[in-house]
Image: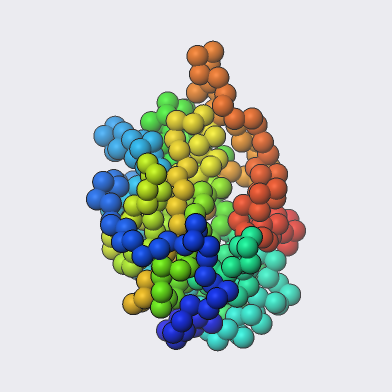
Amino acid sequence: MVSSSLSNVEIVPKSYVLTEEERPGSQLIPICEQIPVIHLGGTNKDLQADSHTVQQILKAAQDFGFFQVINHGVPENIISDTVGVLKEFLGMAEEDKARAAAGENTNGWIYSSSVDYANKDGVHLWRDNIKHICHPLEDCMQFWPPKPPTYREVVAKYMVEMRKLSLRILEMIAEGLGLEPGYFEKSSEVQLFNGNYYPPCPDPSLTLGLLKHTDPSLITILFQGEVCGLQVFKDGQWIGVGAIPNAFVVNIGNQLEIISNGKLKSAEHRAVTNPREGRTTMATFVNPPLESMVEPAKALVNELNPARYQPRLFKDFVQTNKAFGPKSNFLSSPNTTN
């Protein structure tokens, strides 16, 4: 059972009611059946993929900025164990989570309940969240939450699988763009784990779990379980993303849009709530190294197709834009990067 300050709330508090422009309203947003669901063919150690799958991914990244992957090779027991231990953490009493987050060795992770974070208008979001850095994995995990006792071991196994999956997907994207093999192997890191709980909401028309945004990553890999709540803004309207058991949702981030010189688009999206059941999700942000310069790939720039983006240090982008929330500086915490 997940514990939240919003558990058993019968009326949406005023501090959670968004402006009319931002709130989702009562219009039913249907699940879009056109968002591609791509079969990856199970485990694939040499990162090779058939040309059909490469073209499917590239077209999905161009048309939607989102796609889902199935038969991806990540063992189901690792996924379920990670969801379980995340729910255990989120199920701790609020005062215990707050006390743990205030400890001495927490430079590498942050827990925020819905009352801790507000948007620019001072309105709170309907979400509890834990995020922690994951690269380099062996150095970072010692700073993750000490409770539940298996948290570090279980989540570390999941992050290893996310690294494998992210490399496969990025390799296929590189091939589709015409970049050299291994282009992203040294220029990508599984930097951030983001665990979310969206409690049941008595009136989902008034509030959101996450406001409309784009991701600051190369790609983001989301496990959303079997409860819908992700919506994508396409062609001037919202569309719903179906919740397929054991599938991962992959979306294109701002940095990959830059590297592709605009061939791939980072789509705006949001998280809505529902009145019946809570929703637990796990997002993995695959980013460039903090000290790397992000710019259009040289192979994609020529006289007919000049660079559309200026080079920028990824670290500067993160800190200037608070790309991963108001405490984004924790990504470069000295305790976890030495």
